[in-house]
Every structure is written in structure tokens, then in C-alpha cells.
Image (cartoon, rainbow, N blue to C red; front, side, top):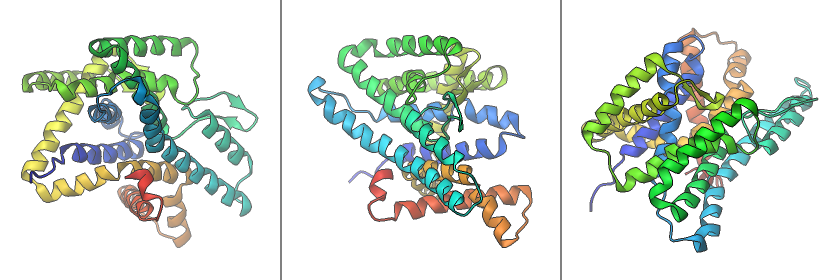
Length: 326
């Protein structure tokens, strides 16, 4: 029996660590943050598109969208309720006011990275925006490949560019619809690559574009930052190509390391949700303060890495919860 190719799991495992690294170190290492943000979130969308199945037609639409909702929307709600639940506990203990609880609830209902200002504060989401955006983009991918097929990739770019331009004059949406549309080309390209693998020379050219993009361009999907749109997209594809080749190398020649990264890739959804919780609750800081431990900056970040991954491993071992994340 042929051994399962874990390359894509390794990609997701490395990618989720890069996401945490960007959040932890990006504030004082801007070049590192720029290098990571240039491709790491598009990579997740590309991989998700790659594993999107071909669709038989509209008769299957209801079942397909339901699967997407169970896989993406339910974990999003779970993760946000975890944050709101923490805020409730803080309020009961008298350490915070109920304002944050109300803001968290309305942010979950609005379900977008930016929302209107309210009496309880600005509505906004944390890193779980990815789940809602992926739900939107995968659902739209279903529509594109069911109706347009060969035109799916160019049409996805038309939608994305239109939304980027619209966002400049109207910066609000709901349920991450705008972000889902800007991510649609990456999901669609991933789907296209399933049946049209990129040759090595094309991947190397894209990697060169990525190095140029790191130097001269900027991409931040969360903030709708597209300074040089074609170059940003080429850079994202190049960074993904580099990570694919690097992960393939690990899978073939460093198998113990590959299995460790692959495990993180398998539980990457749980890691993302617990990273969102750790950021929102400042749990790592609170534990250190509680036990009176002072750590150097590198030790502080290492502790938060370990805590986040430990929480994710614990989460997937809770009966009835594992199926939401794995």
C-alpha cells in the first residue's frame, strides 16, 4: 500500500507556526513579518482549493455547503464563544466590565475583521476571520466551477479586484464576504492546480517573484493591503511554491521532522483557534504573572508557542470536540 504523501500537511504545519511567529515577532521585526505575510495566508487558501473536489452540479449544492459550514463555520462559532466565555468569567471575577462581552457577541454576529463603531467599541475579529473567509471563498468556488469551469480563474480575479476597489470607498462587509472574495483567486488557483500541476520552471519563476515582492511590495489580507496587486499575487504563489518544495524535501529526507510538522498541520485548525484564544485572553501573560515568573523576550514567546500548541492538543482530545477540528 502506497504511503500517504504528507507534504501538504507539512505545509500547513509550518504555515501555522509562521502565522504565530508573525503575530509574536512582527511588531519589532518588520522585514520578517513582511516575508511571512507575503504568502502564508494565501498558502492556506491555495491548499484548501487544491483539495476541493470537482462538483457534479447544483443538485449537490446543499450537501456541499453544509459540509463547508460544519467544517468551518461551526469551529468559528466555537472559537469565538470560547473568547466570549473567557470575558464572562473575567466580568464575574470583577476584573473586566461587561462591555467587552457585549462587543464580543456582536463581533461574532457581524463576523468580519472590521465592523461599525458601537457603544461597546469597534466590532472586529481575531485570527478566526480565516474560517469565515474560507467558507465564503469555497462556496463561491463551487458556484464558479459548476457554471464557468474553464473561466473560473479569470472570473475569480475580476471579483477580487472589484472588491478591493470597493473596499477603498466602503470598508465594511459582514461574515467576511469581502475577504472571502479577495481570497477567491487563491482558492480557485489551488483547485486549478489539482488537474494542471505547475512545472518546476514555473514554480522557480514564481519564487523569484516572491523575493521581489518581499522587497518591493506588501500584502496583508487582514488589512486589505494590496500595494501592487499583480506582484502581490505572484509573490504569494512563489512563497507557496517555495514552501511546497521545502516541505517535499522534508517529507522525503527528514521523515521524523516531517511527521512532527505534519501532525501540526493536521491539528492546524485547532492551533489557529487556540492562538486566537491565547491572544484575546493574554493567558500566557496571566499565568506567568500568577506564578511570579519573569522570562526574557525569547522565553516569553517560546512559552506562548508551547502553551498554544498544548491547548490545541488538549482541545482535540475533548470528547465531541475533536471532530470539529480534525
